[in-house]
Structures are given as structure tokens and as C-alpha cells.
Length: 503
Image (tube, rainbow, N blue to C red; front, side, top):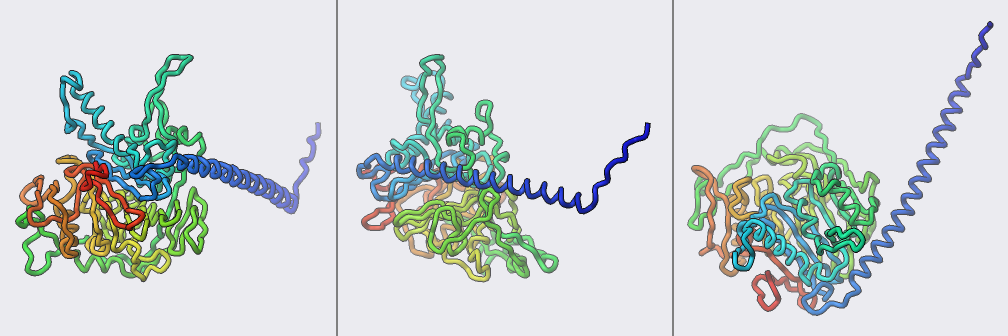
């Protein structure tokens, strides 16, 4: 039986078919994007409505929404958590985690707390951190946390978020099953893949847990990249950020009278490493390029390239870096830390900078104007509060960054005598102390715990008898709480204001 001759398709017909197929695909993608934008807009409207409802509860003096700005750096142990409230009553948390809760340091009385010492101390640890997070000046009677920022996926920065947002336990009337309840979350910002957050909560990973708290709405989980891709016209100059002691100063590793480690300056070779590079801007949210706005506008880049996440009268919150991966300064760290989100809060004319585990390379990135890299920025200079990067590790706090920041208050989130990473380092504490001394700042008596290197590694609890400066660690000074007063614009350290409820 003769075979049917297969009909040949001309090249023109084939190209036409491919073109039509591509047009169909492009139309499908266009419709999907249009629908996604409409869905996102609808969900954004709902989120803003929830924020408005959140602020509807009238505040008494000293409570969220009283017109003042409040921020607390929570004593987590070896971890990080900052919770703040804007003058209009919006709430924002940066990180919430700990790799060493140090619950054994909590007070224990068997007559009151029962015979299970470990359980009682763990309970008191959680009650203490929730006491700060849910204080009336912060979450109080809030129905949701408006903004959550995860600086990067290291567990000591996120693995206590469920504990921090816990609101109680209820019993299901039908099943009798007891169910934990949590605050909702308005929007989550992060700079890494969500899969990098490997914490397991029940049968769901962290992403699933968060999306449940956000009404299963993935459009409100926003991966932000604010960085440059860097190229060199030639091979990089050699230099390993070698330290060189200034003339007339004792060798690095020696101690001064207060157990502070003698600091040293960076070498010229490190600066040479920055020469000859070219940088191309990357600004995306969930993979889409971000537009700019002449004035601070939520969801847009400002005139200097920062990504604005909140704005109200007298208060703007901007992300300055997210996902930085180029090792500008040969910092002895990794991409995860280098890619930390850096958050700038500008309120009542004052600036607060929260650095996560950002490294000297991250600091180098934000020290210069994002759009004009040859120009040093004043954005991160003369701060009201600086939360030191990476818990006071030598990977962060470059001399030039610390000197420029010139912060009125310096906060280091650390544990107490935790040997795991031995933080903060004495050299870094000394670096910040020296800037405070040069500025003539003073503070009431307090202790600083730090690890000092020399012949071995030692932990010193230093009472600062001759160097009383506003430099604090959560490990030795507890949760650190501040207010910026709406009337006077003054920065108030609430720990020293007993009448104002400082922790």
C-alpha cells in the first residue's frame, strides 16, 4: 500500500506558526502580569486598611501612637531584634532571633516557679522578650505587625519570630484542640531566597508560616535587591586588609587601663583594592525593576537610590542596601552577611541606622552615593543611634564608617560571655569608644562585656571607670529602649528614665 506523502511545511509557514505561538504566549504573560498587578493593588489596599485600623485605637501618653517615636533593641541572648513605633503608630520589626537564648540567666525561685528549673527559665526568657515587643509603646493592643524586615537568613536573626509575635493559646470549641495565636504581619522585606530560611515550624517551613500570618498572600513578601554589579578593567591589586598600628601606639592586642584593646588603622593596600572598579546599579523587588520618585514614595527609589518602605509626616524608613555581594574590602565574611539589609530611619530630623550582619563591604557600599559613586554620602553620618553590624565582629565597623557615623548612641546586640563566636570583639568596642571620646560624649556608669585577644582569648566585664560613653551591649546592659520626643525632638534613653518605663 503506497504511503501518503507527508505534507511539507514551508519555512515561511513554520516561522509564521512560531510567531503566532509566541504572540499567544506573550498575550498570556501580559494578562497574567496585569492580573498580578490588580491582585497586588487590591491586597495593598487591604493592608493599608489594616494599618489604619491598627492605628485607630487612641493612645495614652507613653503608648504607641502618642506622637513620639520609640525603638527598643531587645536582649535576645546571642541574637538580634529591634522593634520600633513611628509617631503615627505604625510598627516595624527588624529581625527576631537567637542562637543562644541564655535562659539560664533568668531568675528562678522554686517556691514560685515550680520544680522544673529549665522550663521555668525558658518561660521567663520568652515572657521577658515579649514584654518588650508587646509593650504599650510598641505592639501593645496592635492587631498586626505592620512591617517585618529579615536582614539575612542566619538563624540568630529570625528563628524567634513566632515567639515574638505569639499572642496566646485558644481552644477550638468543636475539636478541643489548643491552638497558638499570633499577630498578623503586614509586609515582609528580605534580601535572599525564601528557601534560605530553613527554620521548620510544625510541618511548614518559615515561608509557609509567614504567609499564613499574611492571609496566604505571597504578594506581600518582597525580596529586595539594592546593590551594584562590579567589574574591574584589570586584575585586582593584592592586599588582605592588613592592620597597621599607628606610630607611637602600643602593639595591637595590648590593653589600656580599662581593658580596652588598643585599636589600629587599616593599611593603604586595602584602599588600593577599591581602585579601578566600575559599578552597575541593580534595583529590583521580587525580580521587577524599581522605579524612582522625586520625593520619598513607598515602593519607589528616592532621589538618592534608597528604597522607601514607609513614609509619614516627620518619619521615613528607607532600605539603603540589600543583597550586596561584592567584597569591596576583603572582609573575612561571606555573601549571606554581606547581603544584609541596611535600614535607615529618619525621624524628627534624627537618623537611626540598623546594620544586621552587614560587613565592611556593605558599609563601603552605603558610604557613597548610590547614583554618584565618587561622592561620599552624608546619609550615614552623624547618627542619633547606630546598631553595630554583626554583633561587634571584626568583619564590620570599618574605621572610616565608624568615624563618619559619629553616633550619639551605639548599640551592640550580643549575648553575655557566649563562647560560640566570642562577640563583641574588644578591638571593635574600642573603635566605637574612641569616636565617642573624641566627640566628648559621656554617660552614666555601666558595664561593657567584650572579648579581648592577646595570649589567648579573654572575656572582660569592664566598668568603664575612665571612659563613660554612650556605648551599650544588650548582653551586659539588657534591652535598650529610646524615645524621640515629638515636642522637643530630643533623643531620650528610656533606660535612664525610670518614670518613663525604661526596661
